[in-house]
Image (cartoon, rainbow, N blue to C red; front, side):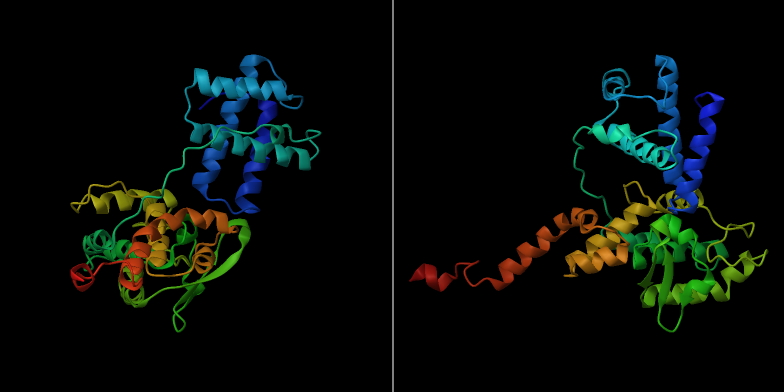
Length: 310
């Protein structure tokens, strides 16, 4: 961990607490912000700059440092600038600095990457890799089913309490980013595994009378890191040659909905996106479906043999 001057720590800790308790950011996201800010303060210390009195040229030199010395990719640079832009806006709101100097700086253009996702048959292989005769296997299968059935973020998943679930309606109350609540439905497959887990595996794991749905082997709340680890163990039991993450299953949820004709605004609401722009990245996956619809529906998509013969 990089070292910074003691006087900086209070501001950083206050900002990270703000992200956690006010913005409801995940632990993984907060850790990224933490590392980005510490790296910036280490740079300021090296250059002898005061974090309260920065000017535009200071930021340009920092941008050059990231590009030319650190050889960071555009996507990494853009993320770091976003972290610092948010941090300095917090400092400005708290009166620590007079203004957010980072609003003057635009980051490099990010390379557009299409979201990676699983095909449905690959997801079925993942589901079947879980041992339903074992309490942890039941839990792991439910994690997969629920991630795919709802498209929730991993931070939202591990925060689900049993009391958040409406079994009659087959819906879950999700606390998302910015403490915004939304209702997400789940289907019959997920419901079947959920009831199995609650009647057997959950009772074995819940040694501490926890209100949370997903528990570790000691009976405590499962962490985001724990979910990522167990997904990596599950995919090793299959022949799938892909990396796995909770967000990749979220991508699969959105991709498959759109491919089956679901409208973009519905997907936006299910994912908990504030802006439709965040959801539009998934529209690439509809290309194959559009081609199929066109081929099957447009009267002049095919030349019939009779027309050729005439």
